Every structure is written in C-alpha cells, then in structure tokens.
Image 1: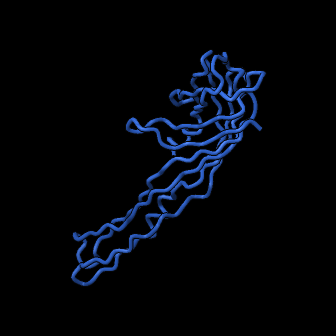
Image 2 (image 1 turned 135 degrees about the horizontal axis):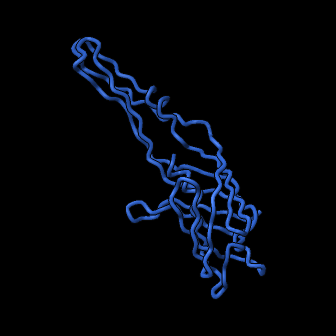
Image 3 (image 1 turned 180 degrees about the vertical axis):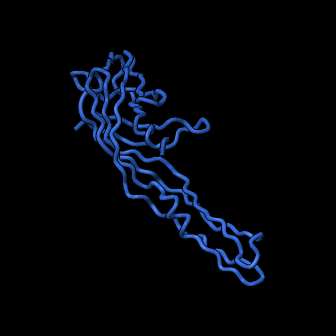
Length: 185
C-alpha cells in the first residue's frame, strides 16, 4: 500500500513546449487524475492434518491485476500540494487467506482449495506535501515521511500553467511500470 500511496505523488509531465521557462507556478489549480499500477496479489494459508499435526499443506494463489488510484491533486502555484486520493484493487489479505481450505483423508493426503482474492473496500486519504519546479520543467515533490519523487511540467497555457499531467511511478528493477493522466479542472 505504501508504494501505491507514493505513486500518486509522482508527476511526470512531458515537455511539449520547448524553450519555455517553468516555475512552481506551472502547477497551479486542481488536477483530476487516475493512475494504474500493475500489482501481484498473493494469498495463502497453511493447514495441519487433523490426524497427524506434523503433516501440513499450504493452499493459496496469486493473480496479476491493475491497482487504480484516482482523485484530485491541488497545487497552489507556490510549491504546496494537497492530494485527495482513492485506492481501488487493494487486497483484503485476511479475507483472501481465509478463502482457502484443505480436505484431508485419514492418511493425511491433502486436497487443496486454493481460494480466491478478496478486495478491500476502496479507501480515500488526503496527503499534503511540497513541490519544486526548476526552470527546465523538472522538479521534485515530497510528503512528510517519504522520499522525494521527480516530475516534469508541460502542456502549459499562455500564463505558464500546465493543463495536462502524465503520471509515472518510480522504476522497479530499472523499469518504469504504471501510468496515468491528470487534467486541470
């Protein structure tokens, strides 16, 4: 969940207008956004044979899916941001683990029911942070208790305010995964 939360804080805005000078004012207003990130969800539970507790079997499974974060990021043009974000596709680990079962024979041969994923209800949180935009459009954003993330601004109007944000999460094993878009309201 922690990596998902920081995902919404990563702004990567492509430079579409070359030669334009950017500043903190380039991010100013409310940006509706949705981002998706690939997830690998796993669940399992180990059971002991009721006829010989030293014999155990583990049932479980895994799926690959997309996690979704949507919400509104409000940038004040002065380097402060408030993000109200809702997380979808978060696993309810306990409920998922409890969908598994094992049927035992008296000889402790196991037949596994590997269960299924159970999703938690969507959750919404509000986070605040600061950002800094350099003249070339690159910058960083951070929230209390987390590391800084980087972004780049573009698609600006004549007042220098960005209207479109392409989101990109931090690389995993050197490869960028997950993407999204934000639009000035």
